[in-house]
Image (cartoon, rainbow, N blue to C red; front, top):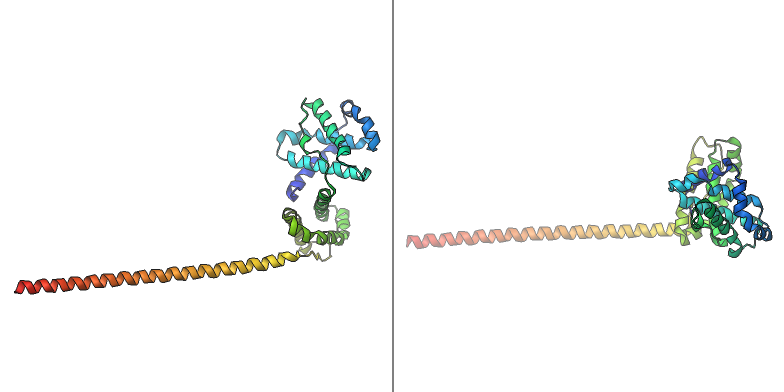
Length: 274
């Protein structure tokens, strides 16, 4: 699951496919042995054409900084497209996309496991839906702060829907998927901050829920901190008491030594007089 900042970087690279020209002669060579299988699954050629362009984004693979995140998102997009057109798709049917990537890699570099090879896989419905909710929430925020007034106003109209989606999942995310919880609440906080700004043109109050167990955990955390503070105070007092006791003992020892020394001197003086 991509964090918001990583997601934004990925989308910038992902959208570059729109500026890439077609390489039909190479594309035909890559997809040729998949035509029969593609026909059975009723996947249109444009999905593979777009995948071809996404894999041709050399900058992502040469630089390497966002390759993992980029390929993860490409795989999410493929799962999204596959489910739209073939709701009953399974992992065996989904392998057609991995075969396409293998063909592309062989044609491009001669190695099967190049570009996004390790990332193309069927996502279970549960994993896919979590990604969908998270990435749609990211997109909603981007639209809400868009410089395009029409896009911004449309996002404002969808605010209540996105609040409802957030509130429906946040307890589960907090209790069972803490990584997802931190990722989505980060963007929720950005939304709240934006809407609280006096320059915001979206007048709707953002009533995002706090997870039920968050308040309990905060109370338990506070109580623990208080107990630890009391324990530290108790230890400090005990350390001070021991230090004072040690000082008193040392002082008594010095006084006793002085008394003994004075008594010894007096005895010697008596002997000398006799």
